[in-house]
Image (cartoon, rainbow, N blue to C red; front, top):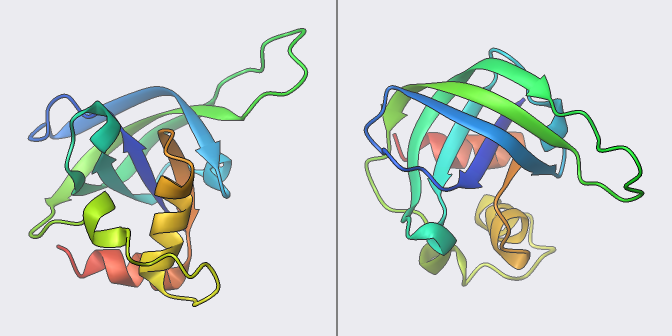
Length: 136
């Protein structure tokens, strides 16, 4: 399975990225070493959307906090960059795809990243993975 992460990425040219305590949704908590991950620099943090692709080199679940009833699962991951995006894909490009039942990969990405705009790791369908691969 492949994944995508939307978060603050301070150094877009880094060869390795470390993302501690990341929120997970839509199957993101199953991310593991060896998985492909697409990196989106969060527009909420001044980023521009899709910037890189990489492979997970370390992944660990973050223990739940005792006494807190409802908690979103979190993971810490390290990613080795394997490519830089050749064209732009961000909120502006995905916003028109809002018919949640049309089955398009653009709609899946818009739904998972921008319907609830918090930063997160999400699992991707094979269609969304193939769509994102075309940006490299």
